[in-house]
Length: 348
Ligand code: ATP
Image (tube, rainbow, N blue to C red; front, top):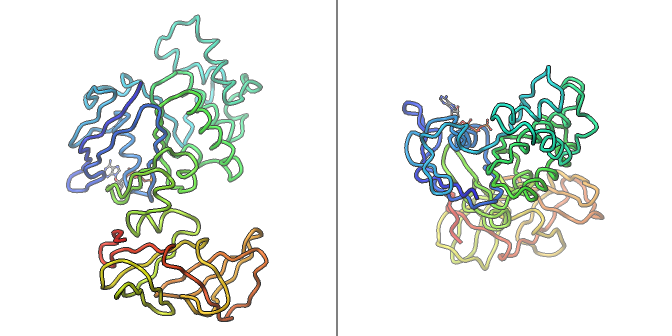
């Protein structure tokens, strides 16, 4: 069992606030992803949970026990970082066994545990190689095996895939997901990559400048972003956001007019996703000349200027048009998201 609780957790260095009043209960065996741009406080949050960073204010508990003053080694947590931290003079086997030696785990069990951990990440053929004789992906798997071998209650992973090339990232990502499921370990995973977050997480915490913006399942965050920051951070392409005025349920801006909305009169930011809109004939809600057109293979992406921004719309793979052709885009009210123009908070 490992339920982790953060209550009013803050981290300050002098007057600089790295993490501001973080509150969350992470369920036993949950896969939680901390997501946000560089410097938003993800790593600091994780280091506080690990005990590598003091908490300025608030409490962190694991299974109901406050761990604020507990040494990292007594927290039953294993960590995997972007830099693998392998010992260059030890082979794969010895690297994986290292945590068992340090923790003075009964020698008799070492061999079996090392082999089992290595098997989980398919490292058996490489047991006698030194880290220098391995690829980046293999090294990362040694780092994973070294975390697995301890059989901890909690895994903390800080951008463990960032040194891998795109293809290896995808396969290692699947392996991590599978491992955490199989090992039934509570996992906290830090990334700035929203696709990684969406594919791995049971729940995602989106952070910005030390402040939690939204906590939810990937679907909740994708379908109902709490504010324009989350809307603009999740999805590829990110949600289209346009400035305009809402009056009597009609949103009006440059090149755009959408009726049938609900929300208070006044300046507003309207959002919709590229795949929810349609490029078509007739009178659409957006009428504008094409600015760019990109063939993606399985779809065609066009972009136009509307509501003071560039707006992307996904058309079918057969769709063909030229730059400067005027297109009509239908943006029905049911695909729209409304945000306060000043605060960026969701208002619909
Ligand atoms: P990245 O994705 O770049 O790793 P992050 O979201 O993990 O970013 P943190 O490493 O948690 O960000 O840092 C959060 C903020 O705290 C940053 O602005 C950083 O400069 C600041 N910070 C981190 N460590 C210290 C420190 N020891 N002293 C002062 N400020 C710090």
